[in-house]
Image 1 (cartoon, helix red, strand yellow):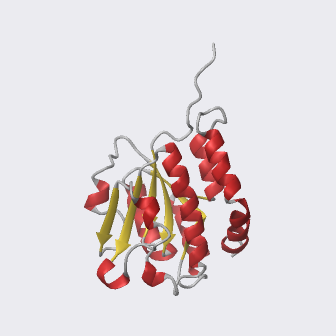
Image 2 (tube, helix red, strand yellow; image 1 turned 60 degrees about the vertical axis):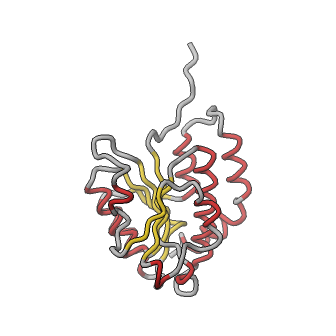
Length: 200
Protein backbone atom coordinates (compact mmCIF):
# COMPACT_ATOMS: atom_id res chain seq x y z
CA UNK A 1 0.00 0.00 0.00
CA UNK A 2 1.42 3.38 -1.05
CA UNK A 3 1.23 6.17 1.50
CA UNK A 4 0.54 9.75 0.51
CA UNK A 5 3.59 12.04 0.70
CA UNK A 6 3.49 14.39 3.67
CA UNK A 7 5.49 17.42 4.64
CA UNK A 8 8.15 17.08 7.30
CA UNK A 9 7.18 20.27 9.19
CA UNK A 10 3.53 20.23 10.19
CA UNK A 11 3.02 23.72 11.69
CA UNK A 12 5.57 26.02 10.04
CA UNK A 13 5.37 29.81 10.26
CA UNK A 14 7.63 32.60 9.06
CA UNK A 15 8.57 35.68 11.12
CA UNK A 16 9.94 38.69 9.20
CA UNK A 17 11.61 40.96 11.75
CA UNK A 18 11.88 44.71 11.13
CA UNK A 19 13.34 44.77 7.60
CA UNK A 20 12.62 48.49 7.18
CA UNK A 21 13.69 51.25 4.82
CA UNK A 22 15.51 53.32 7.46
CA UNK A 23 17.87 50.44 8.21
CA UNK A 24 18.98 50.06 4.59
CA UNK A 25 22.22 52.02 4.98
CA UNK A 26 22.95 50.90 8.54
CA UNK A 27 22.68 47.10 8.45
CA UNK A 28 25.64 45.02 7.31
CA UNK A 29 24.80 43.34 3.96
CA UNK A 30 21.18 44.50 4.13
CA UNK A 31 20.49 43.65 0.47
CA UNK A 32 21.45 40.02 1.06
CA UNK A 33 18.92 39.78 3.89
CA UNK A 34 16.27 41.00 1.45
CA UNK A 35 17.31 38.36 -1.11
CA UNK A 36 16.92 35.49 1.36
CA UNK A 37 13.63 36.88 2.63
CA UNK A 38 12.23 37.19 -0.90
CA UNK A 39 13.14 33.56 -1.55
CA UNK A 40 11.44 32.18 1.54
CA UNK A 41 8.35 34.35 0.99
CA UNK A 42 7.98 32.84 -2.48
CA UNK A 43 8.24 29.41 -0.90
CA UNK A 44 5.66 30.42 1.72
CA UNK A 45 3.22 31.36 -1.03
CA UNK A 46 3.61 27.97 -2.73
CA UNK A 47 3.40 25.93 0.48
CA UNK A 48 0.80 28.26 2.05
CA UNK A 49 2.90 28.89 5.14
CA UNK A 50 1.56 31.72 7.33
CA UNK A 51 3.73 34.83 7.49
CA UNK A 52 4.01 37.35 10.32
CA UNK A 53 5.93 40.62 9.91
CA UNK A 54 6.78 43.51 12.19
CA UNK A 55 8.12 47.03 11.99
CA UNK A 56 9.93 48.70 14.87
CA UNK A 57 8.58 52.18 15.60
CA UNK A 58 7.31 52.61 12.03
CA UNK A 59 6.65 56.35 12.37
CA UNK A 60 10.32 57.01 13.01
CA UNK A 61 12.06 54.12 11.27
CA UNK A 62 9.87 53.70 8.21
CA UNK A 63 7.83 51.00 6.52
CA UNK A 64 9.01 47.53 5.58
CA UNK A 65 11.32 47.83 2.58
CA UNK A 66 9.71 48.23 -0.83
CA UNK A 67 11.11 44.96 -2.22
CA UNK A 68 9.22 42.91 0.37
CA UNK A 69 5.90 44.75 0.62
CA UNK A 70 4.32 43.07 -2.44
CA UNK A 71 5.18 39.67 -0.97
CA UNK A 72 3.53 40.55 2.36
CA UNK A 73 0.04 41.21 0.97
CA UNK A 74 -1.21 37.94 2.41
CA UNK A 75 0.67 38.13 5.73
CA UNK A 76 -1.47 37.08 8.69
CA UNK A 77 -0.16 40.09 10.62
CA UNK A 78 2.07 43.04 9.72
CA UNK A 79 2.34 44.55 13.17
CA UNK A 80 3.85 47.76 14.50
CA UNK A 81 5.81 47.41 17.74
CA UNK A 82 7.86 49.37 20.23
CA UNK A 83 9.18 46.42 22.24
CA UNK A 84 12.10 44.57 20.66
CA UNK A 85 10.55 41.09 20.53
CA UNK A 86 8.09 40.19 17.78
CA UNK A 87 6.08 38.24 20.37
CA UNK A 88 3.45 40.97 20.68
CA UNK A 89 -0.28 40.32 21.30
CA UNK A 90 -1.22 40.85 17.64
CA UNK A 91 1.06 37.92 16.74
CA UNK A 92 1.08 35.71 19.84
CA UNK A 93 -2.73 35.33 19.75
CA UNK A 94 -2.34 33.16 16.63
CA UNK A 95 -0.23 30.55 18.45
CA UNK A 96 -0.73 28.04 21.25
CA UNK A 97 1.84 26.36 23.48
CA UNK A 98 -0.36 23.25 23.47
CA UNK A 99 0.19 22.86 19.71
CA UNK A 100 3.77 24.12 19.18
CA UNK A 101 4.71 25.68 15.86
CA UNK A 102 7.95 25.49 13.89
CA UNK A 103 8.86 29.13 13.42
CA UNK A 104 11.60 30.41 11.14
CA UNK A 105 13.01 33.90 11.72
CA UNK A 106 14.72 36.28 9.31
CA UNK A 107 15.49 39.96 9.78
CA UNK A 108 17.31 42.39 12.00
CA UNK A 109 19.03 42.92 14.28
CA UNK A 110 20.47 39.51 15.12
CA UNK A 111 21.51 40.40 18.66
CA UNK A 112 18.46 42.45 19.62
CA UNK A 113 15.03 41.81 18.07
CA UNK A 114 15.86 38.41 16.57
CA UNK A 115 17.40 37.27 19.85
CA UNK A 116 14.56 38.47 22.06
CA UNK A 117 11.91 37.03 19.72
CA UNK A 118 13.68 33.66 19.75
CA UNK A 119 13.92 33.57 23.54
CA UNK A 120 10.20 34.36 23.88
CA UNK A 121 9.21 31.69 21.35
CA UNK A 122 11.37 29.03 23.00
CA UNK A 123 9.91 29.94 26.38
CA UNK A 124 6.43 29.36 24.94
CA UNK A 125 7.42 25.90 23.72
CA UNK A 126 7.79 26.52 20.00
CA UNK A 127 10.60 25.19 17.81
CA UNK A 128 12.67 28.04 16.36
CA UNK A 129 14.81 28.10 13.23
CA UNK A 130 17.09 31.07 12.57
CA UNK A 131 18.38 31.42 9.03
CA UNK A 132 22.08 32.29 9.10
CA UNK A 133 21.74 33.66 5.56
CA UNK A 134 18.73 35.76 6.58
CA UNK A 135 19.79 37.75 9.65
CA UNK A 136 22.19 40.62 10.24
CA UNK A 137 23.08 43.58 12.47
CA UNK A 138 24.62 47.02 12.11
CA UNK A 139 27.93 45.60 13.31
CA UNK A 140 28.73 42.28 11.60
CA UNK A 141 30.66 41.10 14.66
CA UNK A 142 27.37 40.88 16.58
CA UNK A 143 25.96 38.19 14.28
CA UNK A 144 28.05 35.10 15.14
CA UNK A 145 27.89 35.94 18.85
CA UNK A 146 24.09 36.14 18.69
CA UNK A 147 23.79 32.91 16.69
CA UNK A 148 26.07 31.06 19.10
CA UNK A 149 24.01 32.22 22.05
CA UNK A 150 20.73 31.21 20.40
CA UNK A 151 22.04 27.74 19.56
CA UNK A 152 22.78 27.32 23.25
CA UNK A 153 19.28 28.56 24.11
CA UNK A 154 17.84 25.76 21.96
CA UNK A 155 17.20 27.34 18.56
CA UNK A 156 18.20 25.64 15.31
CA UNK A 157 20.61 27.78 13.30
CA UNK A 158 20.42 26.71 9.68
CA UNK A 159 20.22 28.06 6.11
CA UNK A 160 17.30 29.01 3.91
CA UNK A 161 17.82 26.11 1.50
CA UNK A 162 18.12 23.56 4.30
CA UNK A 163 14.94 24.88 5.91
CA UNK A 164 13.05 24.89 2.61
CA UNK A 165 13.83 21.22 2.00
CA UNK A 166 13.07 20.33 5.62
CA UNK A 167 9.66 21.97 5.22
CA UNK A 168 8.94 19.65 2.32
CA UNK A 169 10.63 16.47 3.52
CA UNK A 170 9.55 14.50 0.44
CA UNK A 171 10.20 15.11 -3.27
CA UNK A 172 6.87 13.43 -3.96
CA UNK A 173 4.76 16.26 -2.55
CA UNK A 174 2.79 18.08 -5.27
CA UNK A 175 4.57 21.42 -4.71
CA UNK A 176 8.10 20.05 -5.05
CA UNK A 177 8.61 21.06 -8.67
CA UNK A 178 7.56 24.66 -7.97
CA UNK A 179 9.84 24.87 -4.92
CA UNK A 180 12.76 23.42 -6.88
CA UNK A 181 12.12 26.17 -9.43
CA UNK A 182 12.43 28.86 -6.77
CA UNK A 183 15.66 27.30 -5.46
CA UNK A 184 17.03 27.24 -9.00
CA UNK A 185 15.94 30.83 -9.66
CA UNK A 186 17.92 31.98 -6.61
CA UNK A 187 20.88 29.59 -6.90
CA UNK A 188 23.40 32.22 -8.01
CA UNK A 189 22.22 34.76 -5.45
CA UNK A 190 22.18 32.11 -2.73
CA UNK A 191 25.85 31.31 -3.37
CA UNK A 192 26.68 35.00 -3.12
CA UNK A 193 24.69 35.46 0.08
CA UNK A 194 26.17 32.33 1.69
CA UNK A 195 29.66 33.37 0.68
CA UNK A 196 29.25 36.55 2.70
CA UNK A 197 26.85 36.01 5.57
CA UNK A 198 27.89 32.48 6.46
CA UNK A 199 31.65 33.05 6.47
CA UNK A 200 31.81 35.37 9.45
